[in-house]
Length: 287
Image 1 (cartoon, rainbow, N blue to C red):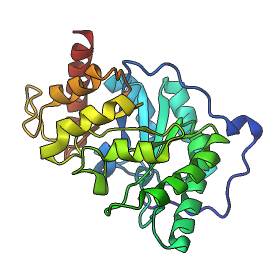
Image 2: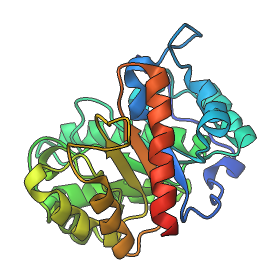
Image 3: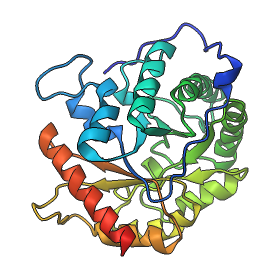
């Protein structure tokens, strides 16, 4: 789904510059919209999902209360659309926490100043949209190559200053160059400083470093993409140990939100399996 191009940065009213503080997020469970990439449609169609309807589905069918957005899932970042989605979330009792800025061909740590400038300009415009959506956080996308951490930190600082004026903080997630290095998240957080926190993704690590990476990331986490791939009818997950991933966070003191990123080629089974995952996490949190 193609993002519309806005002609200028939003002229936000003062009331919109500070996103409201979300209700407590401890022990809350939600989802990230990347789960629905193959199932999205801009208009109602059989077997498809309209993003504006997702908050009500989360409330009525899934019993989930936290929504983590991805730019690639939104048909528009224009203010009118963001207002509609935020209003639908408020009506359904859903807290929108984060906007993953998965916009292609951006490199805010590039050694080329013009490439960095372009990336930061696009990200700043997207932060304006995140403020309208009521997000607490945004997450730039890590590139495929290990960056110069000084350049990366400088760009984070600019975005953090820009976001702070709009009530938005920044996150880092294990992706791209980071997936094989269990020390990558702590290294970026240390290099940036100034309150940068992380959003570990349980599925993005290479298998050899998954649990070590989670153990090092969770003490720095404020949200988690709790990712699951193919699941058995009994909730089993052969690809890696979901309970061990959960335990890594729980033992580190992380309490939520836990946002499911799960995949299925058909929408109805995807929703059913999210309920299975929800019930697993509820059981583990109450143990």
